[in-house]
Amino acid sequence: MSLESDIKKMVESIGLSLYDAVVLNENENTIFRVSVTAPGGVSLDQCVEASHLISPLLDVTSPVSGEYRLEVSSPGIERRLKTLDHFIQSVGEKASLTTIAKEKFEGEIIGVENDEIILKTKENTEHRIPFRSVSKAKTYFEW
Image (cartoon, rainbow, N blue to C red):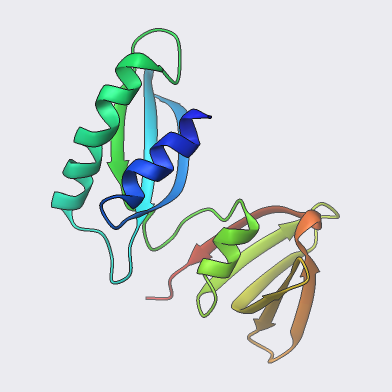
């Protein structure tokens, strides 16, 4: 089994879903960031509990060589969309997408069908964008 699937099982055991697990370098520090979600949001206590569950696993199966810091948090209201499942979870939210062909789209994700993201723009135009053609995507919040 992979480290990510083990982490997924651990967070699911406490009612959370694994959104993403990535290694980042910020200000000369290595961070292993685990993002979790839950219906209605994620509390600080849930992040602490998940961190306590995951930490012993990382002592045995380190995500990187050398020193790193574990961070467990919600992915936030504005977050990157990297998998088809991320788009499915974000139906009803606003997103900006850039395709491999450098086309840019902004609007509400209204559905995902047959590996296509269905986006409704401000002009009320519906676009079907194949997931495989998306190079970058993120949700955004209009304040």
